[in-house]
Image 1 (spheres, rainbow, N blue to C red):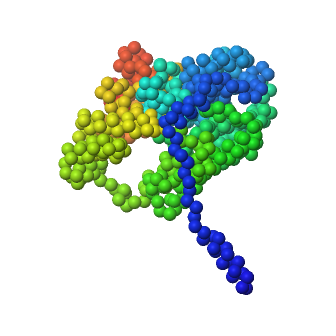
Image 2 (cartoon, rainbow, N blue to C red):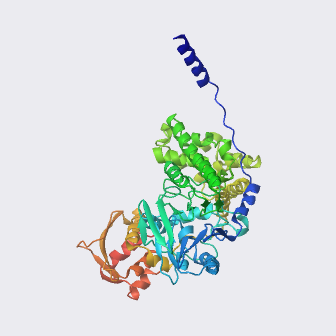
Image 3 (cartoon, rainbow, N blue to C red):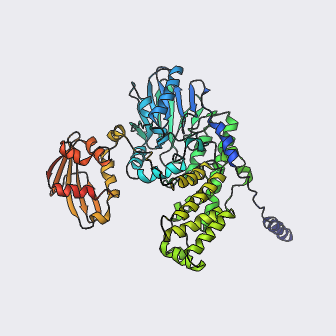
Length: 567
């Protein structure tokens, strides 16, 4: 018994030893970001026999896999013009027809060059079963806000010379220089796994949620080559992206990487950054990458369970040095702090647990009360100005929030705010936050022109499902213009025989894909014509005059309906 007590005493002593403080890695600098541009040196790399990847032409890579009599393309870049540049090079390597295009996921930089690679060959488009839904969501329901925030995050609001690189690629070509989208919707989809053969090449697709819920990876067992899509690239991943995204499941992301690791690939070809060769090297990097993601997830949850809120967790969560020192986890894209907040929201939602944030004061009232504490509006402006002079740029920026809530569009405050944003942006090495600061500063210029980088052209609109277009109308209803309206319409499409009954009912729009009698106005048209009108590509009045839209019933109700959807 004495020895047992002694054993427990020893164990207790060991177990209660002082904790070892985590050592953080050195934060990258703007100079490090400039050096990171070498990762995107423009070239087509032969990874192994018959596998070629185009790096540096666009934000995302395009990949050619040669078959015996036909080829495979994995991801297509983000515009027709970029895809054309890459395809011409691929054709000099192997001019076989393209039999299959594989989308690793729905993001535009991987899908919007598809029409070019599909020319003259009518290939199957392989993707996960949910990819089409996500493509339609961005084009229809969320396009304005995603376009606006992407403009800032990728620096498309800035002159080209101010964009060093975008962390995962040289630049986002979408929306630049009048480049056009060339999207094709998937024709072959799967839920879990899919095996097929193209040109004598055995292909395996695995659903692998990570950066997106529809993410897949491609495995060529005959070549021991793995194509991870956006679940792995040479920078800390966007476990949350500041442009906005559905919840990214970190635990699922880790599981997806583990699926890849245990295939023991000898070649790894990401859809961003350069390819890798060597089984041991690849395994080590994939292990480090998944450990970095799991660390952020697990430690965020641990701190949540201790009662910390999202901001408190973000302030104290750091990657251990052995992970943070990896060049594959440097913060040139994502951030552990942003990711921690995403994990918190994913598990617990928006409420941080603090009762003072449950029903906070309106922002303007909060600002007025804050200003009273320091005296008056001019007193707070002087404090904000002095904070900027002292180099306290973040504090000064936050104070301009209060100032502008009380005096919107005050010129001297906007100038101060712009100066803070420029100072913060110039210090940043993470391109996402760097360009978001600098773009937000540029948008304060009086002559700034906002651009919609995701604005679809008529060719994209033609392919956009009419069901998705009708569904997107719901989130465009303006309550102030429709709260007293009660209108029923019927839309009939001559080219598809589809019908939609639409009810505008006191600020709410109900859409049903079948005939319900009682409509006060009946609209007949082709699908693409109504889609073009709803997208702003064609004019409603002109379409009514030239007969593109044929109307029976109340034109007043029709015009009321459309004006209820437009600001």
